[in-house]
Length: 186
Image 1 (spheres, rainbow, N blue to C red):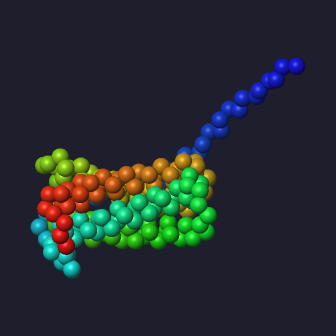
Image 2: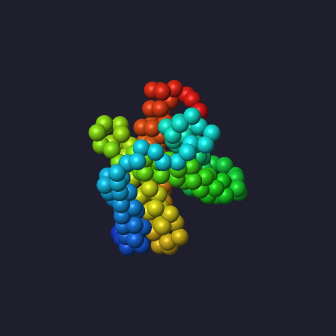
Image 3: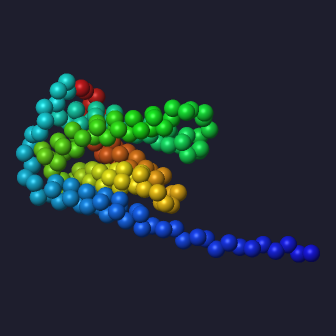
């Protein structure tokens, strides 16, 4: 008696619920880039309370956001079962570390857009400007996708991974550059 296997045809995933989050994220990214390009930079923005200057403020706040981004990555891996850890509080840690990381990026983004604008004259600065726009776009898409039902299982890990990747790139092109070029200063 021969064993026969019935191959299952993969079910088509409905990507329609992703259209609004991705479209909104794309509009945010493009909107920030256009604003950063057409806005005449002022050269100053917010007072860097407690910091020696705006670059130091941006470097340290971005470092804090990046550190919280690592917490986000690790807690997501626990939530998705990739790291085996019995931690009923991990969802709360994930939500609050994400909120805090986002809040740390707001004064940085405000300063970048208002005081400096999007710049494309040097490769590091160009990559940084593009990553900043992409970060807020993909973050928007992720936040809008969270409450949606019926999304493919890969949606949140991919959007979260892209958000973390963009934040890592922002840290590398700003904070790491600042600390290695100017030095570690408050």
